[in-house]
Image (cartoon, rainbow, N blue to C red; front, side, top):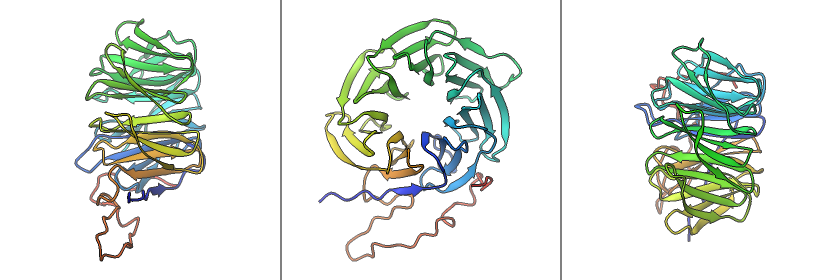
Amino acid sequence: MAMRQTPLTCSGHTRPVVDLAFSGITPFGYFLISACKDGKPMLRQGDTGDWIGTFLGHKGAVWGATLNTDATKAATAAADFTAKVWDAVSGAEVLTLAHKHIVKSVHFTKDSNCLLTGGNDKVIRIYDLNQPEEAPQEIPGHTASIKRALWCHDDKHILSASEDRTVRLWDRNIPEAVKTLSFDTSVSSMEYLADGDVVLITYGKTIAFYNAHSLELIKTIVTPANIHSASLHPEKDFIVAGGDDFKLYKYDYGTSEELESYKGHFGPVHCVRFSPDGELYASGSEDGTLRLWQTAVGKTYGLWKCVLPGESAYKKVDYWSSCDYTNKHKIWGHL
């Protein structure tokens, strides 16, 4: 008999959670940031969901959020026509980058020196964070709102997904698309996996995988419901996806076989991401919650404890005392 998933539910947001991002693995573990329509992005310990703080300063819904690799910086994209850069250790606002319309996507380069943004004004922007007073490099070309813009190929290229039903690959130094993919419907999400050079794209009920250099199709998986987001395991073992039917789906990447599906939330699932070590994945929903799910159910990891025959299935966990207070990310925000 298969073991039942017991997710960790992370409360605190008051409106739909629309984006999630993990940091890389640091000496202090890894971290998770969430973007929400309540305008208050939150930082959490990645393996437990323990709340660290809330970034306060936006005056509208936050549509996108990201962390740099070592979790020292955060960036957010919002409906108040700004992208903001934050000190993720203290929670302090570092920069406000004004835009001409709603910002939907933010992404750091590997060295954290540049920030990529995209949004409703259809323009990709590259900000030099060491010279924030300088005008950003602008890359026009899309004919509708940009939903996602990501660095790829060691930050030499950019992938962008737009409401104009295209995904485009750009050379950061050339203001023209190198390659373009066109779809019959709007792209709902895009993820780039550097290890393996794969780009994952969802549209309608389809999860599609492309070579990130050539944009040649590798394979597709058709799901039972419209999918809003999907994520590929770091070792390319599994895919998880969520969408309109409140469910989470897990597939074998090699065979495309559906391994499990279960009701994950009390509303549509807007975002799904694997942790950097692949041990869990996080989901965010219309119901205002984040949930953490085990990749291998029953394994002792984070706040999950493997229960052996003869042991009690219940273990009292003091949620706040489970925080590692030797961590440099002290609790600094307010719910």
